[in-house]
Length: 183
Figure (cartoon, rainbow, N blue to C red):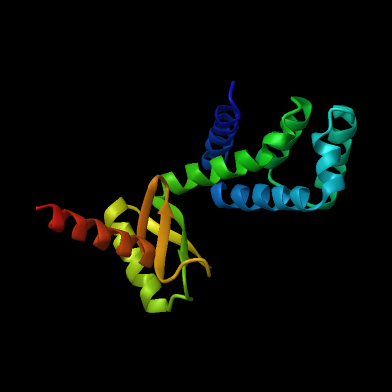
């Protein structure tokens, strides 16, 4: 079974449990925080992902952690299951897949915007409105400055790419001029 399929199965099962108990957002925040904590510390990541460390030891550490920091039973259950099945390496993909399931259920489309300069609030709102109309979902975008762009912006939302960069505009103009000369 492919990594993506495994991650999606865990995410959908976790979402189903969380939805049943009305804790979708809480579970999302908890599993995201746990993933960040594990990912940022190499020693911790190694401990939970290493085949050398016994699963029983990993479970004990998780249980001790959950006694100090409370987590929903859904998150505790999935974390312990991942350890026992030796699938902790899939946690980042499971978190992403869970976020995607939550977004889909809420009619949200997430994406990244790369622009040559910082976009003002009104530009961001206009872009989010345009993308929302195009996708039929509420656009939630992360904005990044990309100094390699000469001007304009590129937005990636799901499988869609909205390219309004200066390079693309120049390329389109060049192709248009070539076609006019050919006729």
